[in-house]
Length: 366
Ligand SMILES: [Zn+2]
Image (cartoon, rainbow, N blue to C red; front, side, top):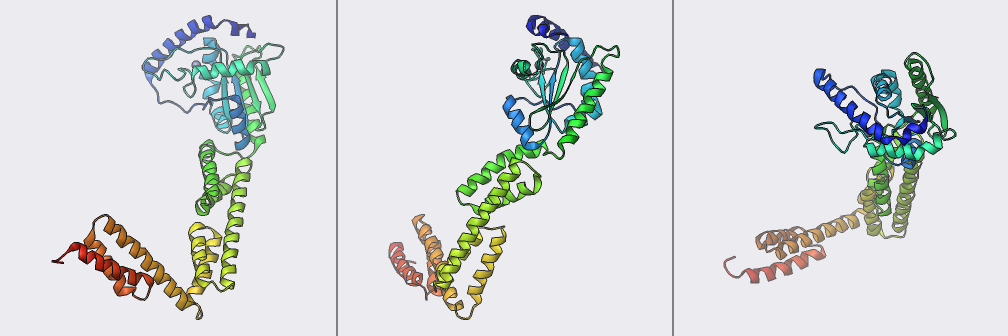
C-alpha cells in the first residue's frame, strides 16, 4: 500500500463510520470484560522522546492504516497479543493514523473511539508530523511499526510484507523486535513513577531554593533510591549533595559560635539545624551537639535559663494574643503561670505588669 491513501480522508471518514457501527454491535452482543490494552500516549513528539530518554525505555511508533479491514486485523490480533502487550508496557507507544474515528454512542466524544487513550486529533497530528521523517522517498507501506531506542534513534522497523498468511509472520516479527528493543534498553523507569517524580523533583528543587532542607532531602532521597539512571537520578543526587553542603555549613557556623563562647547562640543554631534538616544524617549531629550543651557541667545552667527564657517568651506572646482576641480569662491564666513559674526570666516581670493592667480593665468583681 502506498501513502496515496493519505490523500483521501473523506473515504476514510466514511469507512470509519461503518466500523464504529460494527464495533458497537459486537460489544453489545457478548460484552466480555475489557482486556488490558496498549497505552498509546498523546502529546508532542519532543515530549515523547524526552519521556523515553528519562525513563530509559524504547519508543514504539505505529503507523496504522486507516482502512477498516487492516485496522481491525491489527486490533484483533497483534494489539491483543499478550507477549506484545507485555513488551509494550515497557515502551512509550505512539500511534499515527490519518483518520477521524466516529465517536461511539455514549462514549467520550473527546477520545478516539478506536484508541481511547488518545484523541483522533492526536493520532492524526502525529502522522502528519512524522510522515516525512519515517517515509522512504515520500512513501510508506502500512502498517509500519518502528522501534526507537531510548535515545530516540531508529533501531528497527517492520513494514507490511506481501505474504499470504494474513500478516501473522509480520506480527510475530513486530513482537520480536519490540521485545528486543526492551531488553536492549535494560532497566527502565515505570510510567507512574515517571509521572510522580516529574512533579516531585521540581517541587523538591523549589523547596531547596527556599532553604527547606528537610523537605527537599526527603524527596531527593526517595527519587535517588528508586531511579536507577538518567537525568532524574542526576538531579536527585545533585539535590542531596546541595542539602548536605548547606547543612554542613550551618553546623560548622554553630560550632564556631560555640567555640567563641556564645553558648546560647550556638544552641539556637543547633536547634535550627535539627528543625531544617529533620530526617537527614546531619540532624543527628545537631542533636548530639545540642544535648552536649544541655548536659555539660559548664553550660547546662546557662542553657536551662536560656530555654526557660524562650519558653516564657512564647507563653507571653500567647497571652498577649489571647488578650488581643478578647479572651481575657484565658490570657490571665497564662500570665499568672508565667509569674509563678518563670519569675526569674525577663518575661516574668513583663507578665506581672500585663496582669496589673488587665485587672484594671476587667474592673471590680474579679
Ligand atoms: Zn481516532
